[in-house]
Image (cartoon, rainbow, N blue to C red; front, side, top):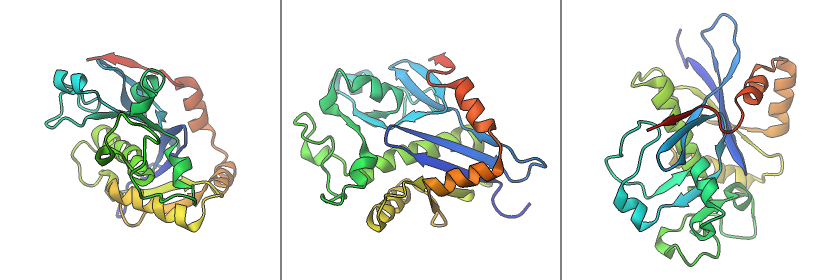
Length: 232
């Protein structure tokens, strides 16, 4: 077939993110949810349909010890110095000054400069030059989902690469034009195609109701948080 092989929908959530997709070449199109590999301990990977919207800066000791790339199971060529997802959420209680959360809420906050590096907000543990803007934090989650797709589905095939697919990102109906444009900016920073479409969440829910297929919901309930774990 010509054109994209998959249609991909992403929920960039305040608490969790998720990626669902449909194979456009299939005779019967069904919605599937991508299990996202992520660290839930420094040496344990969990495949979960939900990617918690948390970003945690690594400590100097953790960087010195080396880190694991959950998408490859190997040490990255260059240390990232941060982790997103389940492990970052777990660390929010023990080291809150190093964790970014609720970036989506900040993205919608018209009373601040949403492109200013202010997160983690009020933290004196992270130097000002290392802090992120709400746009950059949102981009980290979107970029992680893109990398997960390319590692699990594309596997080096350019026709299956994330950027070659039809991409939709949902946004709240309450997002003003500025917040929508900043969401596009976050997606651009994460390497998303310019053909990206934003879809308001109530409209997305209506389309799902029209489709009448609850397979994705059933799979989310069956898999749930804390799904299949793998030791590295």
